[in-house]
Structure formats: structure tokens, C-alpha cells
Image (cartoon, one colour):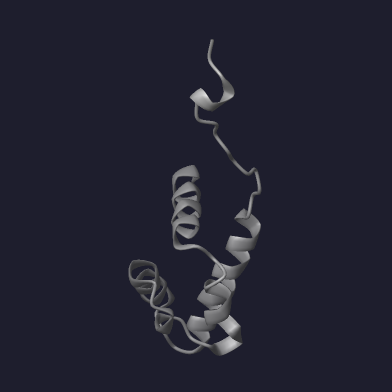
Length: 84
């Protein structure tokens, strides 16, 4: 007989942050664009390095993007890209 301690339970949270992530990315994108940067290049630089200096402080964009976990951000971007 198997006891409860003989198997691994799976834990998942069904908290969908898609809308929050989209709002943050949109704000960051617009802030970078308004300051004269290429938003795509800057955001890719941030994702690859996780160096917040790729993101401007304008409109609190740097603080906003740091609220997102890089893995979560990549998952959301991939889901969005593949669903189109």
C-alpha cells in the first residue's frame, strides 16, 4: 500500500497575469519609444541580461519591468507569439 509520502504532488497556481504583463510591457515599450530608444532592442537586451539599465526610468518603466520574472515574461511572449 502506497502512503501519501510515496509520490510527488504537483502544485500549480491558476493566477493569470497576462493582462498585467501586457500592460507593463506596453508602458515600458511606449516609455522607451518616447525617450528615443529602439524599444525592441532595449527590451531584448533586458531579457537576455536582466540588466535593468536597458530600460529607462521615464514613466517608472524600470521599476515596472522589474515586477516581472524573466521566465514569466518569456512564457507570456512565447504564448502570445504562437497564438497569433
